[in-house]
Amino acid sequence: MDGKSAASAVKDWLAREKLESREVTDAQALIHLHVKYPPTKQGHVFNVVIPKNRDLVLIYSITRVDEGQQNEMRDHGKEDPDAWEKWLHDTRIQLTRSNLDWVLHVGKPKDELPGPLQAFNLSRPIWFDGLSQNEFMQTMRSVWLSKLELIHQVKYAYGKGIGKPGKVDDWEAKKAKQRTTKPPKNEPKSHSIDTDETGGFGSDFDPADWV
Image (cartoon, rainbow, N blue to C red; front, side, top):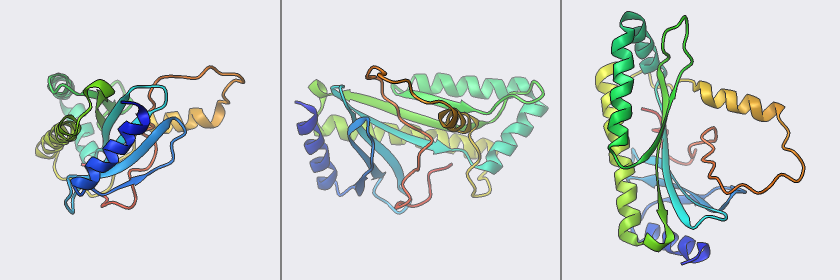
């Protein structure tokens, strides 16, 4: 299987499962889709990417933590820094056991106090030699269930929030760096995968992309 046939197969599987999707511009990918999953009114945006020069499909989903929940986390860190650090540590161990790749975006420390959890990105690659409809859909399901688990975990500990996505320090720093840094000429092609978390979450879908 090559990238072209993999892209065709993925589109066919999404159509068969009646999953809403749309293609987004991505110069680093053969195809980059925003997929609404699960197929309900409260579906979240999943990214399905086949990067150039890589023999794999990457599935990932990004979640921003609500501003109100971030405030609660910050208060928790002030009242009991050790307990907040343990919550983060336990969350990292939990995600490591999930058989997914993950990134937690934690806010910058302030007055030597650890920052709040601001966003998280869960992902899993599928190489072409193991790509099938079952493997693709089971991966979508695994990413969703792990995402949902962490969403409920945050809500249980820090409330429902105020319905407003909080800031993400890492993304703001990345955007600032991109504005001031020009790429060198004749830069060699990179085979790394850039999930570009600073981008949009799919405005055509329901705004349920934060906790």
